[in-house]
Image (cartoon, rainbow, N blue to C red; front, side, top):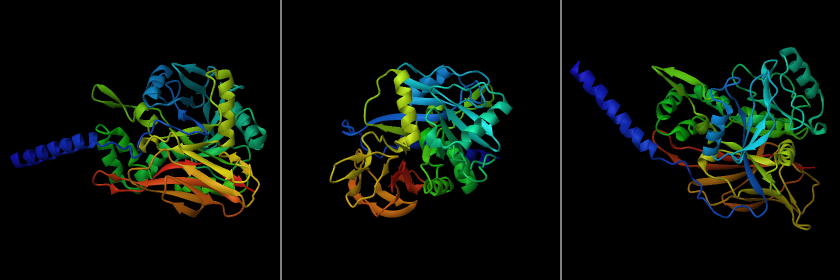
Length: 401
């Protein structure tokens, strides 16, 4: 009995010593630079966030505080099947708060946002008709609202059938869906992340995520036929877990909001007037003028990616439709040289077409096609993970016709 207790005490002490070591580990593999892009203004926006009015655990005021800690410039509330009309979009404490909604539709969930039309407070039958009508329209012809398919392959919510014309895009990086996939890949690794969470929440969550292969395949396949947008979704609710006399919020809003986000790349600065800014934000989201970044791996501010016409020197942003000529090149620049081995991958029609291992470079385009890039890094994580390939940035598409 004494030997058993001694063994347990040794393991417990060893675990806390390891936990202290883990708590000192920083995920930041990109050196911060004061200078940012000369071409774009970069605005961080996280979406798919729930308050205590639906399936979240905290009111908007608490989420606002957590979002500021996570350095979000904007975030979008998407309460599930809201019964009340949502408030107007506004700036609160210098942070932009957008109000959308998430609706159950058949076996799936759809994120809806409109800065002009707050069609919330719909009953179940009304919402199904409302969404069905939106899905039947061409997304490109609907300039007043955004409709996104959330977590298309999450257990219990898998999308079935063809992608409707009315969908603007899908979430390729839904944090809850990716964590569920991690459980199916390795239950032991998932349990280990849960044990590490109190010591280093970012590391515990980041090590769960694998490449969203199914989501990317659906995204690339649909993009061959029409414009289609890739989104990040936090799926933040900080559900309270009862533990003795305490309620543990796992994972916290701050932890989730600091992992990944959408980064809008705008050619002109926002004004600070929400009435004007929300229309500009909607236009950027609908056009795909943004990239997805796992911010926990490093600050991406200063990242640039555009197609350059070398004759006219015109720069085409993400989401652009471009007439194919021999003068087009794909230019990119990272904010700094990553501290770990990395690669910048050019994908054409969803297939790897070229690779560079430089923080700034130019890809020659290989004729008409749908182009995007992924920036991947291979950092050394604490044991037992060691070296692991992780995607840091996913851009949206460029359409060369």
